[in-house]
Image 1 (cartoon, rainbow, N blue to C red):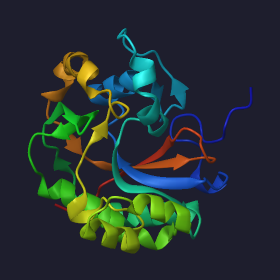
Image 2 (image 1 turned 120 degrees about the vertical axis):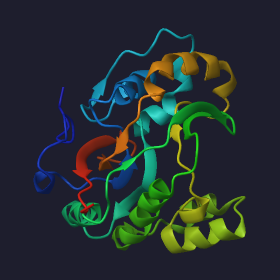
Image 3 (image 1 turned 60 degrees about the vertical axis):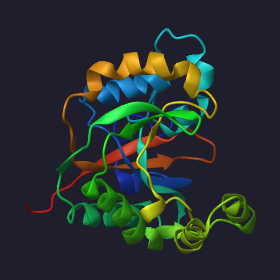
Amino acid sequence: MKVSPWSGPYGAKACGLPEPYRAAVYYAPGHNDPLWQRGCAWLGQNPEAGAVIPQPDIAGIAEATSDPRRYGFHATLKPPMQLRNGFAAFLADVETLALRLQPFLMPKLRVADDFGFLALLPAQNSAALNDAAALSVTELDDHRLPEDAAMQAKRATGRNAAQLRYLQLFGYPFVLDEWRFHMTLSNTGRAEKLLAPAQDFFSDTLEAPRMFESLAVCVEPVKGADFRLVRRVPLTAAQ
């Protein structure tokens, strides 16, 4: 079996890799954080190792997690996009952005039904988290290659005025003040049956304090492939 050069911990050296179909910036818990290990197990995929892993023994979980499994356990900061200037230039600007951001304490998370899908949501608002997401959108948007008219029209369906403006400006409706932190745990329509099992599965990982201390650079190597976490870029702004 041919192994993708994007597979394995952190992938290969960035400039030696083929250009990915899309790239994104996500929040992901540290790879030694029990929440990362538990979240990857829930979805059945570790995007940092490029490995399929066993899911918990819960009826129907494999089918109910097929959509978020492809993207890996994460919260979106800068949504997936095709790159105008290549991956090396994109990564360099993510590293520049990380120089402007200080590590900060994450709000506690809770398992909840989020409009029909299951997700980890923050228990309270976090200005630092909102700022990290907003800067990821605005500071990296020069790298975004606009989507075709058909995809833009699809994204525009049912959106309010602010969302339509953000779609025009940044290629995605749910950014800036329309953004909400969430770590998706199920397909749409599966939250009710999985809510109690998920609360039990994640219960011993959500109370511990954790820091937001890096930007996770993730790629879709070829169209339709599972996303891979290829670089964790530490936040290094002076205190």
